[in-house]
Image (cartoon, rainbow, N blue to C red; front, side, top):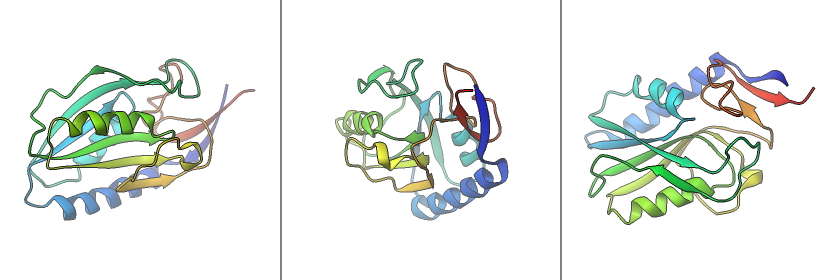
Length: 172
C-alpha cells in the first residue's frame, strides 16, 4: 500500500478550530453531550473538545459497518451504546467521516427513541458522492471526493489511525 498526503496537519488543525468556534457559539449555556463514534472519531473529538469552553459531557458509541473492507457493508450494528443520559439534552454526534450515511442515520434513529432535546452531526470529512440516505451535517470540516483515506483516526484494518495527516491509501 502507498500513502499520499491529502490533508496535512495544519489544514486539519485549522478546520478543528473553525468547527470548535461554531459549536461554542451554538451551544453556549447548554449542557452538551458530545457522542463520539469509535474508533475513528477519537483523535478528532479529543482535539475538538480541547478548544471548547462549554459545560459538556463526552461519551462514545461503537458502531460497525466496515470490518476490514474499504467499502461499507451496508449493515450497521451497535456494539456499545451511550452510557450517559440522553433524554432532554442536546446531543452532538462526532464522526470522522460520513460517506453512505447509513451509520449516522442508524445512530440518529437510535438516539431519537431516547428523547434528546436535539441531535446534530459534526464530521471531519464528508464523502457525499457515496450517500445512500439523506442527512444534514451541521458542522463539517471538509467535503472530499470518493477516495479511501486513512490517518487522524481513520483506519484500514486497524492500521494507520496514528498518522497525523489524512492520506489517500493506494494499491501499489
